[in-house]
Length: 473
Ligand code: GLC
Image (cartoon, rainbow, N blue to C red; front, top):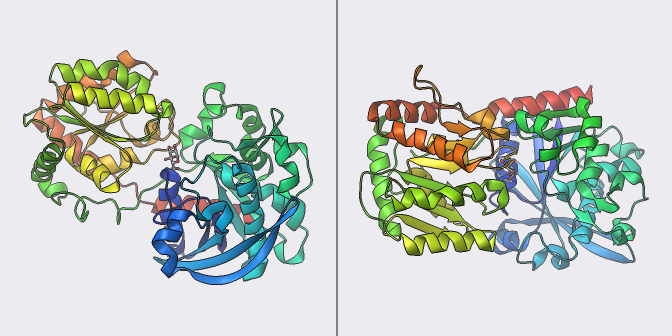
């Protein structure tokens, strides 16, 4: 079966978030399971800078964008058995130093959606399924329906759209309409704006999201970001499939970026060495207290309002040390920079994204914090488990589905959690974790259970294949 995965970022070619990890690893597993899965992405500036010499030109054509005709070059490369295509347009993607957030995002991604569908004929690849991801590709199911579904060669393609984060929808003024090169219908519109995500939600044959819990949460007002009613109408065609992670990439036994490699058998030594290295890097004092790690985009979604309420209380008493990496909201950045200035021996802060530093935090921390307001799936908690770092999470979305809460009576579970979005509840969960940390025997068993969890892609990829097959009938 032929699958075309369409998105706007995939590791190692481009990345702002977890979507990139998914598109960089799911197709590999689909192909291992005998699919012909290929991926298409925009050729972003970063891709051009790092991979230009690997990309081979395939063809080029012109795409109508309202009054203009824009160039589309298709280039390709193969990585780990997966064919990647890139849509090259210097003006839209080639020199923008961020992936999103430009005044013409609607035009850029409208162009991209049109170019992807035109590409199929140009390269002679007609997939059984077009599987689109997030708002940037949300017009594709609609464009397919309106412009391609009756063309002989394109007939019978089924569309699946995956929501990685419903808060980002691609909303644009209706002035964009003439640039989309398709007839208008109310499918394109929500709240008097063009809404790319909504368009996909009403036109894709099937909708998925990245955990089972999130698939039910988004039917409710708190999580739906306005889409709850649209989704309720489509409940029969909505499901959750949890993400996996790529253990070739995230494995403390082989990870070249951490100070000391370890596995289940020598994790105590591994943790101690990596903790020491992390402390040295951040110039934190040596003591016998646990390190709490955070690796996150610094946004509201990730629960920083809760954490900021209690964290000073914890570090000022010297009960814990904190190491945080991330970037985003300037207020949150400032808060943690100031916390570091106040407690330089107990707080390490790295503002920015840095893969190597992130891995050093996964490996060197004892506890990993993820108090998200909402979390479609979350990958950091899965990486933490593998690195023997015990997650403390809010029980929402994928966090609920992947972390089993510790039970001291039965000695089961892999982490700590709290239900309500409330700072006191979070603190209670952190304190529970600290208490168990103080009992080395229980802690060791807890860590080991986490390291033994298997969140590789195989099971989830099989679920996608089942879905693709069902849709093809
Ligand atoms: C988004 C979500 C995150 C999810 C990722 C990959 O970044 O916020 O929860 O893990 O997409 O699906």
